[in-house]
Amino acid sequence: MQEPPNEQTARTALRPAVQSPLIVVGITHPQTCVVVASRYRALREAGFRVVLVASPGPLLDRLAADEGLERIAVPMRRGIAPVHDLISLLRLWRVLRRLRPEMTEFSTPKAGLLGSIASFLSGVPVRVYLLRGLRLETISGIQRRILAAAEKMAVCCSHFVLCNSKSLLAEALALSLTPGEKLKLVGNGSSHGVDFAHFAPGPSALRQRLKIPDCAPVIGFVGRLTRDKGVPELMEAFDRLLKVAPQARLLLVGWFDESEDALDGDLQAYIRSHPNVLCTGFVKDTAPWYRAMDMMVLPTWREGFPNAVLEAAASEVPVITTLATGARDAVVPEVTGLLIPPGRPEAIYEAILDLLRSESRRRAMGTAARRWAIENFSEEHVLRLTVSYYRNLLLARTQQAPALAPRDAMPAEAD
Image 1: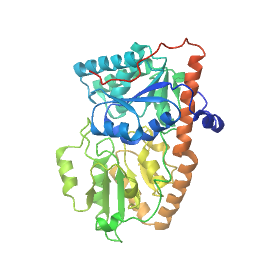
Image 2: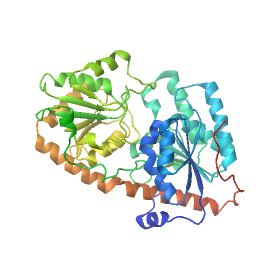
Image 3: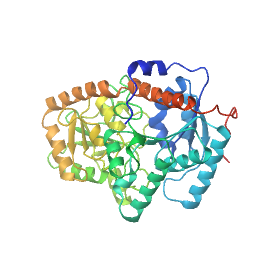
Image 4: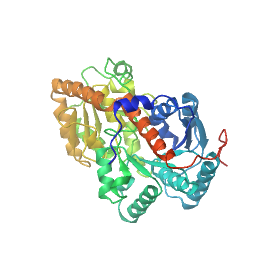
């Protein structure tokens, strides 16, 4: 495994270069724009020309405008859609042939697959696949084999596979997705770390605004409301908790995602009508919501590296999450939070009850969580290492490859 660059190298990497190397970054759905803005901003500020490719939508347009990025809208479906996928692949190939970037970084399952293939067919000099998680972990049968084949194809078409966490790298190795030398980990993982100035402890005005009694414990959840995030088990555990803590509130900061693992209609209706459950829908800035929580629970079945856990830690909120891939890297058990097996409502219930019994323990865990996260996952540190790593990839390539032909000055919308 390649060693991450040191701090001195990272600081040097942030100085803009004389020329602006072009990197095309691609994601499937604009929802991901919410969590990648700082990564792309860091690349741009370091001297890269960044072109963002994603499915069309207001979130894509807003991110491009806010961060000064060029953007190209290429419709991509999240599920398996052979004809539509082929059209998306051709559009991506045309975009890359026109732009002739020095580097591509594609991530999320569909964009990761189609973008990696298009990058290979276009002869992009440096091709990076950012592995944010493995959807196949919660799938079985023929669909799992299809997803495994798709991951292997994306990996095969890429020069480097950046894994979002140590356990994700280990899982990719265990599944034999690629020889180990292709798998890389920058620092301790995470695609962008956490902004400790923005996500910080402090008083919350939300409890009063939401009319939550001072004596009511608030159990929080942040993320997409789906099966793979463990929402059905969380609801079962919370209903059991109400028998011993009837004042408790469950704060669901997220939206009902209409993905392959969407919650069924009955459960969605139950959540919306539950008197002790507060469901916010999509929230652009989650920072104030963590301050309203006594603890956060993420009973996920799979992750790459959960950003929400780092944000909670920065806010001095202890976290209960699972031993699933990615999630187990985000908590120091019994120090910053608790780890439990996935798919176990009774384990969620017992862990919540355990933390509710001792406010002093929750406070100690919260303090330790913020300190641990600052030491390992500050946004500045993670992004410096990422920029340095990408600079080194380009430098190594230019030392062994001829100069690229001139490219168009500005991208156009994909047809």
